[in-house]
Every structure is written in C-alpha cells, then in structure tokens.
Image (cartoon, rainbow, N blue to C red; front, side):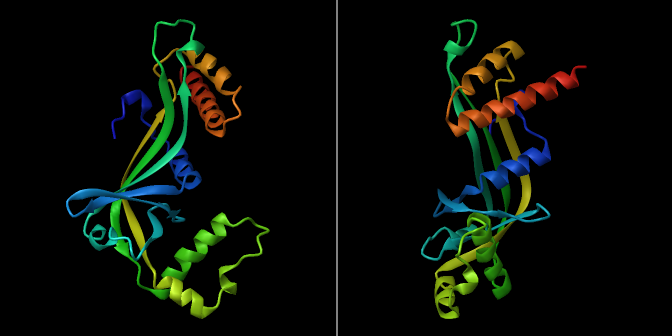
Length: 209
C-alpha cells in the first residue's frame, strides 16, 4: 500500500488493536490469474503470529490460495475531512483513515481439535457474554455436517504494513479544528478518528519536548 512517511504506523500495540477491533477482513489472492477477495472474520493468535478463519467449501478461492502469498486487509475507522473546517478555504477535501495490510502464507487446518477451535473461538468472541447460545449445545451430527461445508485455515504472518492518515501533514492548529468538528458528529467512525488524532497530537507534542 502507498504510505507517505508521515502516515506510517509502526506502533505494534496500535496495529494489533486495529486488527482485533476490525477483524471482519478482506482476504485477497489470485484465482485463475485474477485477483479474488473474500470477506470474512479472522482471529488473531495469542502470540500475534498468525490468523485463523475458514472459507465456505463452495468458495473456489481456497483451491489456489494455499499455494500463494496472500494479502489480508483490515479497514479501520475513517472519516471525511471538509476544507470548511480549516482556517483557510484554499485547500481541498480529504479522508482520514487507518488501515492494516497483513501478508502471509495460508495453510489448511485438518486436525479436528484445530477445526473445532476455529469455530468455537469465533463464537466466543462475537456472542455477547449473556448470550444463551453455545456451540457445545449443537449436536455432533449437526456440527459434523456444518464442518463438512467449510475449509478452516491458518495464516502465518510474514509481514505487516500499517497506515494512519490523521492530518499529520497539517499544523496542530488545523488538526485541532478537525478534531473539534469530528467530535460534533454522532458517527462512530468520526469519533474514533478524532480520538486517534488527539492521541497522535499528544505523542507528537511529548516527542518535541
């Protein structure tokens, strides 16, 4: 991905936080010589070295993906930035956002314990704590049938690129104006970008002292 120097995100904790909070990702590989993308939830391993998930068996992407380096895109918060928020109207609109690109090697999971873990960990993550649903309550017959319709996999992470475009190429005064306007919004993305911009200003100010 194109990342100007001022937008490069290197803080590992922030990067993994973006991955975990935006885990419904886009997995991209080549299929029959063309780019192919699947949108799916992925679980980051405890040691942060791999991702786990599953394809629908009917999805042809898995037939060739296991022989390739793949790209996974985690899109984070994003917000439109209006020139009307600046102290001057001699500029243009832009978009602030964060994004993480993960590259890796993907391998199928064939061990029954691993397959069960892929499914149960996703359920535990997304079901509310007080949810009455539990995968353990599903009969072995039904679970077996469902597992026949998926292709579980693990992605070994080989490299990560991360970008946080948060108006760093503008003055702190202008960034503060943007934050003020974003905080007036009820949009979750706008509020999240405002919060990240604030954190970035604090780090930038502390670093210059």
